[in-house]
Image 1 (tube, rainbow, N blue to C red):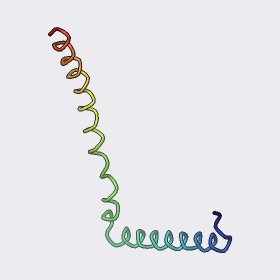
Image 2 (image 1 turned 90 degrees about the vertical axis):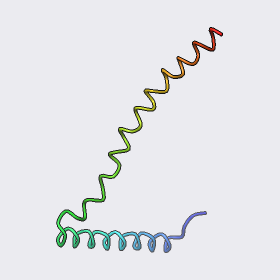
Image 3 (image 1 turned 180 degrees about the horizontal axis):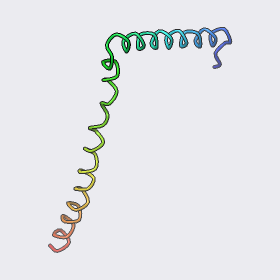
Length: 72
């Protein structure tokens, strides 16, 4: 069901208000604390190197287990 125009406008205004408050806080933190506000972001970098080793280790193990099973 479609949202009424008035509800849609209220939603947009609410999001805009939240965004402005968030930017205001972020700006104040950056001014007061320096780089303390930006330390939260780079948390995803350690996850990327962890993914390739299991993927690389899985195919040789699968190939090795097939060969003895076929021989027996």
